[in-house]
Length: 97
Image (cartoon, rainbow, N blue to C red; front, side, top):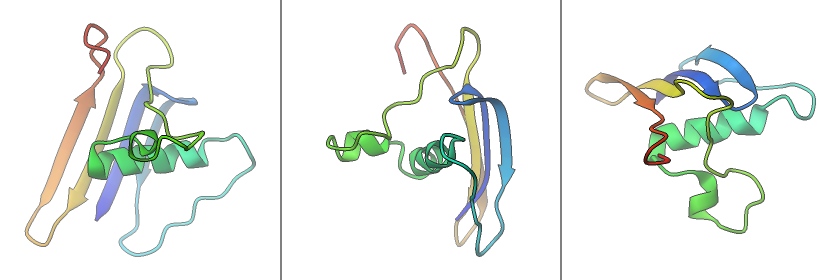
């Protein structure tokens, strides 16, 4: 289960940190605020693939690139039946990955 998401210099917000409740989480807001982007990041955190890679017909869910030059990271933590794992992924401009 995904417990925590943190992004820096990726997508519509310069920095975002989100702690998720153990059972139910509601994400609301006006159009264009990044709700779908947040779900794309959650999907990537759990599968290591962007939604657009899984289904090329999607108009959203493409690879998220840094919003500006500099360090861009996606961090998350999740729990399994046995333990909690933390992970931080950094964007590498040279490899475009």
